[in-house]
Image (cartoon, rainbow, N blue to C red):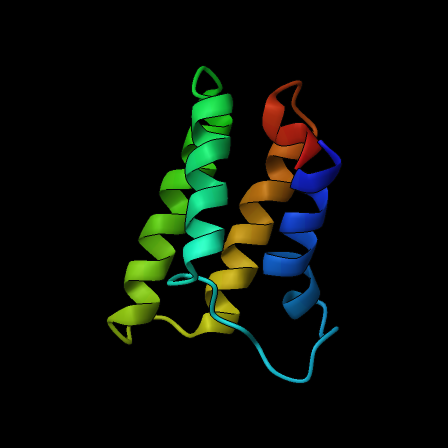
Length: 94
């Protein structure tokens, strides 16, 4: 679980909080993609995590298409993730 927290801090939260000089797009990062698939398999029975996984895919597609800024995509993902933290699901630990 510690690696999950680190992964999400580095890929989503740090850029959203301005902890880096520029936003980093991890949508096409092979390591991030592998981590997400691994997490999806681990939490496949959790509908909240499935939603976050699917949301990430959709937001990446919109960023790639130029329909959404990377910053807006990060904010939307973080808003969704925060809403699930109050629930008792695997995504609560995200």
